[in-house]
Structures are given as C-alpha cells and as structure tokens.
Length: 467
Image (cartoon, rainbow, N blue to C red):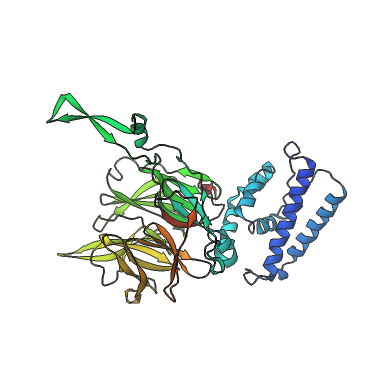
C-alpha cells in the first residue's frame, strides 16, 4: 500500500512548535504501542509483527534528525495501515487536535476507516473501553461525566465534576422566553375572556417563579457507538457526537408518514447493513430513518397497544419496548423486540408479575435485559433476563432502597452498578446491597436530570454515508 507522507504547513506552525508537536506524537504513539506489548488487555501479540520494529526504528531515526537540525519537520514515512494502527490507540481529544496540523492530517483524521478502526479497538479492549466511556446527563442542558472517575478504588472523597457540552440548538429559548420578556415587576399580564365575550377581555396578573429555565429540556432518545440521538426541541432530532461536537439534523418524516401526536423513538446500529437507524412509532405506524440514505421509510404497522411512554432500549441489534398485546378478549404484556436488520417485530415474554405495560420500562444492565417499575408507587425490585430471549430466565432482584423510576446505566470501575434513581446517580453493590449517592458538581441544583452512556469515538454523523 502506498505510504503516506504529511508535511506540516509552515504558514500555520513555527518550526519549533512543529518539532515539539511531532516529538510529542512520536513519544505518545510509542508509549501506547509499548503499553499494548506488556498489557494483558492487548488485542494481539504485537511481537510477531515485523512492522512494529520497523515503525519504531523509523520514528527514532526521525527524532534524532529533528534534534540535530531545526528544519521543517515531516511526519515519518509509514504505511497507512501502521498509521491507522497507531492512531486508533489514541484518545479522541488528541486526534481532534491533530486535525489542525495540516490538510493531510485533517483528511486522515476524517477518514471513516480510521473511525471504524478506532471504534473496533474501543469495544474489543477492556482498557480502551473503560478510558473512552462517558456518562451523558441531560436536563435543560447536556453534561458529560468521566466513567473512570466513578467509584475509582472505592473512593468517594472527591465530588464528580460534570463538563458542560455544546450541542445543536443549545441557546434556542423555549416558549417561556417570550412570555418572560413581557413580564413586569415579576408578574405576567394576559387577557382572558369571560363568558365567551371577546370584546371586553379581562387582564389577569400571574405570579411567575424567579427561577424559570428558558432552555428546552433535552431528551436523549438513544446512544450507540459514540452517536447520541437527542431532541433539543419538540419533534426536532439530531444525531450528535459529544466527543467531536459534530451533529446532523435528522429530516422530518414526509407528510403523512406519522400523523402529529404522541410518538416514541428508538435508535441503534444495524450491523449487517452497516447503518445507523432511528425508529419512530406513532398512531399505529412505524417508520425508520436510515443515516446511510438520509431518508425515512414506512416499514410496518405497530402491532401492539399504542401506549408506550419511553424510548426503546438497544441490545443485540434490536430495540426493545414494554408493550401491551391484545390477544382476543385478554390483554397481556410482552417485550416488543424490533430488529434493525430485518425491520420486523417479535415478541419476548415479560416477567409474570407484569400486568400493565404502562407501569414498566425496559433497561439494560451488564449486557442483560431488565424490566423495571416506572411510576405511581415506590418499589424495591426489578427483573433481569439472564439468558436473552428465554422467558424462564427472568430473575427477580430485591434492593435495599425504594424507587419510583430507575434506569441502569453501567457497571462502574469497582464493578458496582451505576443507577439513575429518581433523577439522582448512585452506586449500588449487588453483592452486599450497600449503596452510595454520588454528588455531581457543575449541574444546577434542583433542575433534575436523566442520564445515559456513550463512547468517545470518531464516528461522524455527517461523513458516515461515505464509508
């Protein structure tokens, strides 16, 4: 394969800065490759690959030349597969910084092949997976939280710090903004007709709360391979990569696809067709958006009672909802499983205790499907399907705390379950039933939030169709 040689643009970087940047890259890449050699998390025994020693020899030679003469630096002459192998081990933040080096580097950092290689390393290596996993928190804003900082070494001495994210339509005010602009002295005056008499409206004074958030609540509809499907405004969807800050507005379905009214969504990745898909269900109609074709299609009718209130949960290339199914005169509850590959529904048995789908939701914990209570009363239990698709494998777990709404997020560094319980984060030890609420700095108190997880990847919502 033809080697790639990238020259640093002298108009952008001074010679000294170019040499420093190149040296940092060489040392950083050499460190990660050396770590892979001795690490038990290595994907393969790199000692058996002659190109590794050749790459190190070339990079050391280039570094010695640079130290002797401060001339215009060049990226080492390496085959493309070696460059991709090195870069796929680096953090996304570093790779995004490399885009500023030159046009050649920008092109390489934007290559879908590098994005796929980087993603493959992330999901198949426990060390990389832990380093690149994040918790995303949504309220009237979006925040990111490092996964590695949660429950590290069992220490809770320091509070967690959330990083505020930039996302599309972040600064678009909601409907309250115009009303607040017309408020006077903390009161809002509006007209109201009495007994249907529009000719003589009555002025009504409304007392407004002092702390009214003028931003819209951001709904998270799903997360997969570093892309998060968000709704920062009503019926306005985006595919958003929090790591690279890239986003793509999902076009509205054509008129007549799904009538206006209550609808719910699902988001995931179709492994077979290499495509990211958004599923929208409303008024008995199911339509699917394909990122590869950038278009919507009606695929089928919704064969269940249309009373779902939560977004679907992705597992094994399938999106799951808790639904009601009318079987003659009886109504029973099942887990609806929508295959992103075949775009058809199948039924999975629900736990025997589930008798109304409206009060239960589906979740995922440690790769297992879960069913949890979602509203109305306090509960202290949930169910885990230990063998996917097998109804007899539902296992009831009882907790030492009660909840109204709960969402499993992931297992933390110390193998404790990270849970979103009634708008608060906590770590729960499933072995001794102890738990600890986490304090997260950087999020306004009293705002409430929802949480999900995502991976730091280079997957682009805009360039995916070029793969």
